[in-house]
Image 1 (cartoon, rainbow, N blue to C red):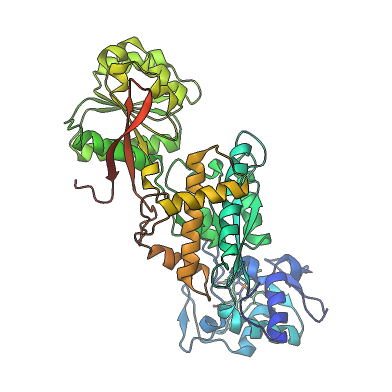
Image 2: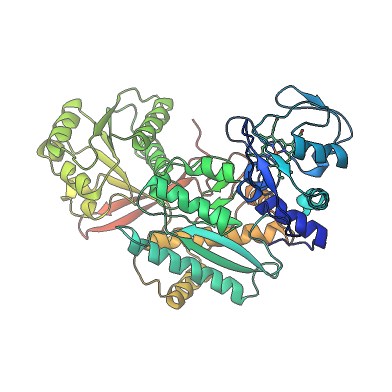
Length: 506
Ligand code: HEC
């Protein structure tokens, strides 16, 4: 799995580090915590706690520190996070640390650090490997391939969508590989099923990282991880490009989202209402499902409108799956709302618009394209003309080459015509990742990939607005096309406006 050549001794050391198993066949045992009984070393390999890169882990409790040799042997004394001070390690004090649990200053280490029993030879091999650890590539990167993982449902309501997305990803990477790959490496796709709930999705993600040893994740479709993906990716130190169907931005350093989420799309609609429709402090209703993610998006929208000086914003939370259109319709009309932002299902949007009080008052109606569509086209003319839908991408973003490339991928992979928005999302994510690999260079690492993506500006996928990230900027095209309804023809009609949120003047 390494991109560098290791000597026999270093390779043996790596096996101890990663698997807790001696290459010579001698036994490695460990005592953990206060316990005096020894357990097999294979149960507690160093990498489990200190990370495959040896740089320690950030999560909870007593933190396993960075044990790359460069840091252990720094020629000045170190003050540790716990306040202890110790001089540089040498081979002897390192051997003492791992066998007796005492650091280079003679301080007793926390018993969370196991005391190992292993042969002198094994300690030497392990030391040799720690000296090379930093040069040893991140998992998933070999001489001739880079392994990329994705989460795609194989059963349940999202299975068909998962199949489509998988086909697009495979097809896109196949085209890249047919062109010689990236820096001489093939891009390999490993697919795992996230199952039906958050626990299953998290386990599948861990399996990709720990067992399948993927280098990065592409376009995972795991709505159950909504709001947690950033945290999980950061903890596992794994770059993620283009998570699909996440309601809100994932956050974290490692997750890059080429296209905007629901929050940004509604934000763009809010800006459109203020600037293009020139509404000034109208009574506003934000209708959203009563669950934390949607409530957070509604709150962010309200805050954005407040910065516009809009002070008459009211939120209506409804029980998910049990939308009470007559009640919401009556309340919203009684409030005198001139603008209604809707978060929820297409059918519920239609039911709300059909309420007599709202047909009379005919407020402006705003929603995002991945939620609301067909119902808007069925509205009677006066209402339909007051509907605006946000689209992350439109066919007008397509260049002839981009359109041709995606069509070729679609045809060759058998992805079919369904879920066009997800096809574009997955294809764009794959293009962004491949571009990131190119920029990260032949001796790539996960950190180099993150830096390369962070420095990406104005990248053309051919099927989306230009993609750019930056420090703290993890949404590639932070804005949305605003689309209206042609009430006569019952079709969507772009307004020609693309509202960017990163250039909004507040
Ligand atoms: C079960 C988790 C765990 C495993 C497995 C583990 N360590 Fe540790 N290690 C720790 C923790 C926690 C500390 C910090 C202890 C402290 O600060 O008192 C630590 C500290 C150390 C230190 C001291 C670092 C310093 O700066 O003083 C060294 C060296 C070390 N580990 C090497 C190893 C090696 C080599 C292995 C594998 C043979 C290993 N550890 C396996 C948890 C672990």
